[in-house]
Length: 210
Image (cartoon, rainbow, N blue to C red):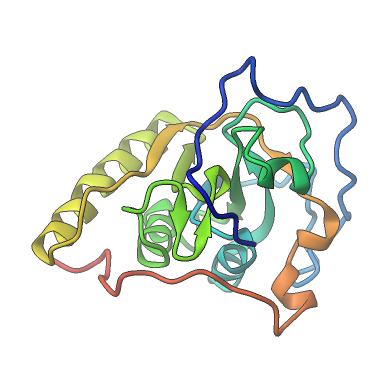
């Protein structure tokens, strides 16, 4: 999952064009059995990028109140990209997890806590040994309320990091762009491959502290 070098975001004219065909998606979540797509009543959607999406997705599907999850690509220019294209650095996309949760059982602040606590948001276009535009830290918001909460959470976590000598947060927070599903073998990867690679790891500072 690692890509080494000096990553640089492509411009819209440099990016690969992609294709009109959407990625085939399994109908059901491999772990929960919930629908991967389609209408779900009374739920909320959140999207996060925190490095390799294999381990990140597992963090969320294991959280009580989360109904279903999916991994994909977002934030770039290429339509319906492939994994190989995203890893080339020529799409502008980052690896993200789409989290669908029941607000009657959990809330967005819990999702934000998982996001901040389970990666290092100060590393720019990398997470640990994983280097590339696809590993940058992002929060894609599906409402004005999420946008406000995400920005406030960044300020809060920045203060906690600064108290312990860490650098500036590089997380991008923006209204959610289009989400493109990743290939089926990436979906719930660590449930299908229990000994697979997981690059997720935080800096040891709880978001709820202070």
